[in-house]
Amino acid sequence: MAEAAKSLLIKRYASRRLYNTETSDYVTLEDIAAFIRDGREVQIVDLKSGDDLTRQYLLQIIAEHESRGESVLPVDVLTDLVRSYTTQAQSVVPQFLAASFEMLREGQSKLMENLTALPSPLNSMPGFEAMQRQQQAFLKSIMGGMATAPASEPDKPDPKAKAKQEDLDAIKKQLAELQSKLSKL
Image 1 (cartoon, rainbow, N blue to C red):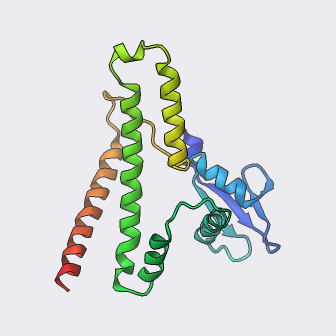
Image 2 (cartoon, one colour):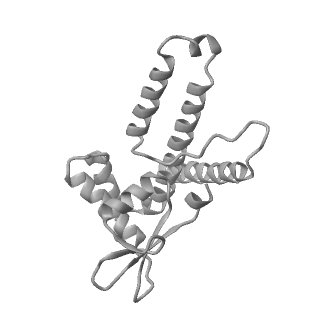
């Protein structure tokens, strides 16, 4: 678990090759996508300048998946994103997207918790475990490998959860205020 929390440093050389500092070997964009699907945080920096290139490479990974027909983002969403770069909504969009994905991850976590905490008569039903595995695989494929935090035990409160919830509440409040301001315009 500590390994997943530690950010994986990838260095880009002048030749544009990407070097994994953890394993001391070169990696591809597909390798980086696999690290992210496995729940790793990745940071990509230019070796010479020290510039953070993570955003640029993440966008490139998304573009390559989209170009191969692995469409996740509908055209209208992409159009709205492009439009947001030229409007006053630009400051709202990143916060809104972050809050939306956080809610999606929380929903997935709760759904997975509920699947494993079903009443015992269903658990003893023949084939129930296989059905649970299929549902979990289905959800994982739908979510595109989005990392989910493991459910914390009920008797051990998660100190980070409270901070995350406070941050989420603050973002929701800001979104509501901005929406109110926009509707007045």
